[in-house]
Image 1 (cartoon, one colour):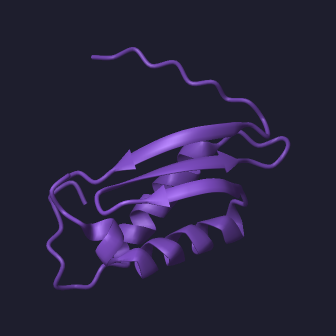
Image 2 (cartoon, rainbow, N blue to C red; image 1 turned 90 degrees about the vertical axis):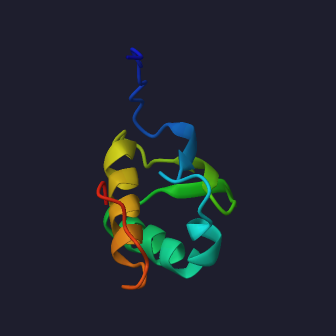
Image 3 (tube, rainbow, N blue to C red; image 1 turned 180 degrees about the vertical axis):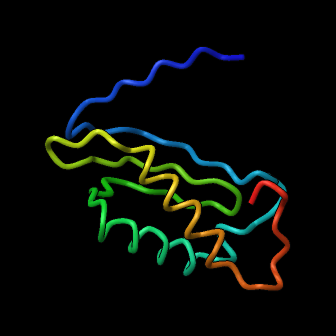
Length: 98
């Protein structure tokens, strides 16, 4: 098991890569509106700046900056992922993880 170290820097800027569980799916591209909504809802309660973002069909890359005094990027990603999954059409197959 990897031993990751995370730097929690208030007001920091980070690069993230986020993958779909099933890499052969194209949910991010097919459901881009659900992703936009999940990000917008999360930013209302937990603000952050999107310095750059690239959304591909099965993964995304993002550079985010948090406000001064805040280093909680993990809550933001948890909320984005949860809201995205809940925003998918009901006919979309969900894995047991979701």
